[in-house]
Image (cartoon, rainbow, N blue to C red; front, side, top):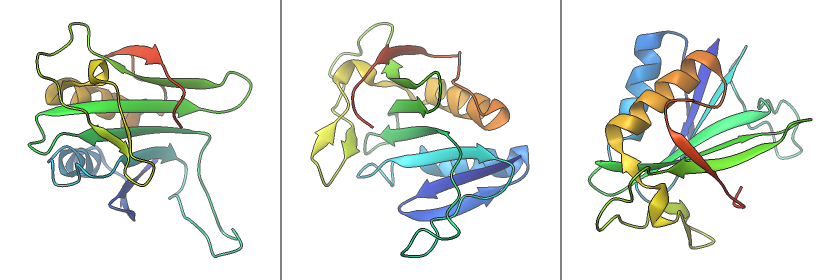
Length: 148
């Protein structure tokens, strides 16, 4: 399986566990707090294709992560399309005091709710699980959401 990560609007790829974990560390660093990083797992690399969409490849699922500026907190968004559509975001089992609003979409000025903020280590475990399985991680709590 190939992990494709869209970090700062640029695709990066990993075909080994170590390489996938390096992408996860980069995504959680806090350097990309202003935008979501999107992870995909598929049998070949994701591509955006040309202006007409030719050559585009994305699987029917993704796990996205946003962070605070320090990279100490994160929020996750998982979606899967098909017969059993799933659209959820992380849920902190105990709301973190003074949890920041983490950006979901800069252009639309959308943010995750503060109860979606989880500790970096929990997000890391969930991202590793997703990169290994390509399915919704079971290591974090989830709540329904409307944002895509």
